[in-house]
Image (cartoon, rainbow, N blue to C red; front, side):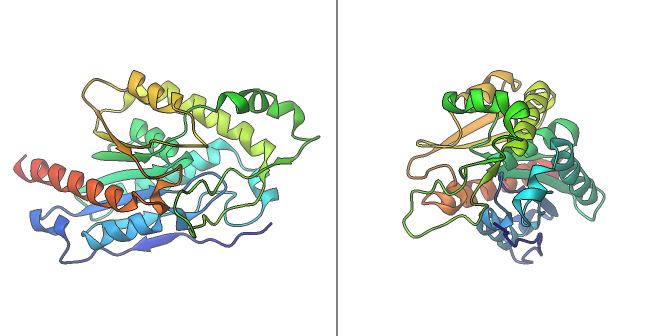
Length: 263
């Protein structure tokens, strides 16, 4: 199944709340595995309305077809993110933050471990597989030629009538790369030295609770703050608690702006 997506750049609203401190923010937002920028676009619009410039790139292998995703590596996803983050860091901004949903959250954490961002926002970030999926992920290097695709991973939303635009199958070869991304990111979590906000759905049928425990265990003391989303499933950026994510992330950036202004 082919899916059409495109990258998004949202101009900051001049009268937004973030402009009151005179700090020019840029935020890089990252979508999840097999999906696209649409899954975080409402979040991006809220940040832009608050006064941040927002970039939502289309990650390699996404927004095209399954065959292309099957040939994409974890290194390509990391390069996509680091290249766009470097562009923002070199731009006319005083501060840059990064955020993401699911695999996008994984990539946001990886970026924060390697680039000087002021804040990181992650919604149900993936750092491990569910117990029922671990064997399949482990065997993916061996079986992807025999079983090239499995069922979809997207669309876990509590709110009726809301759908996530994503591939309807999952390439097994890409799952192998996802596992590699998990390993790389877990190894570097201790390098993050700026605030991390974790938005964690009470019910998540895609990412196991062990991912949050890994994050809590490996980040330096005092860096992580957690907000539990009571009414949303995995794709919380399109679910009942989306507005909570919008308001809290803007409030956090506003708080950081005050510190930057006084520095």
